[in-house]
Image (cartoon, rainbow, N blue to C red; front, side):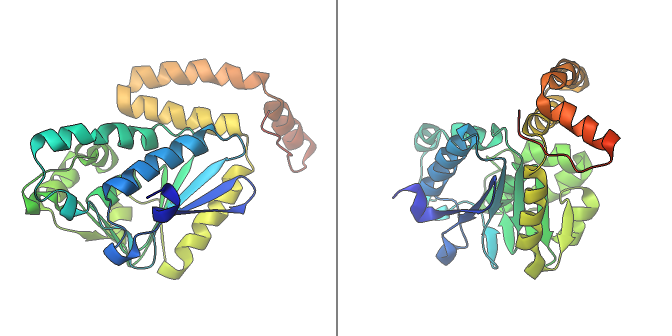
Length: 259
């Protein structure tokens, strides 16, 4: 099975790639093939200079309903270790391009963790988030104990992780897990609209902003500030900086070239 079997890839606008998880018969559950396809696809798109923004989505019923339990129910500890899932998750997390998750339906377990690998989450009102791993005798393994806590704080995260109970998009927005909540029918169009706006902005500035935020989240305030202070002057060597500032002073639209 190749990536095209489980992920549909289109380019709806200049610089924008739409990735659609394509296992609708199992609510886009993450099996090993899909996990490898995600890692392979994100690595390839990250290296493709024509790609500015990535939109990740599923379908009306599910963004991703979590791990495919048929591949876990009889697995041994050695088999789980040998799958090296951390490496596959890390490839998605390491993407330098802005990633927008367009979430409708279920985003549970590994699906919620996958959404949290994005930089912006656009959710439909009918979306359902959660980390139900405890209810099948395990714990999150794709970063939820860390990313969720950083996103919503200790006490909200503990309730979600320890209870395993799902919650709706409005609750996700209130606690800071979603960027926007819209009618389900509007989610994908809004995500693509936002992706187009970002793709028209200076790519180097977008990259440095993303990396600086993640540096601070992952390594603390001092590391984040140090990275920001190193990146800030580098942007003064770009043509996009000059164009952006000249356009603002001239009261005209900027025409960025990515240089």
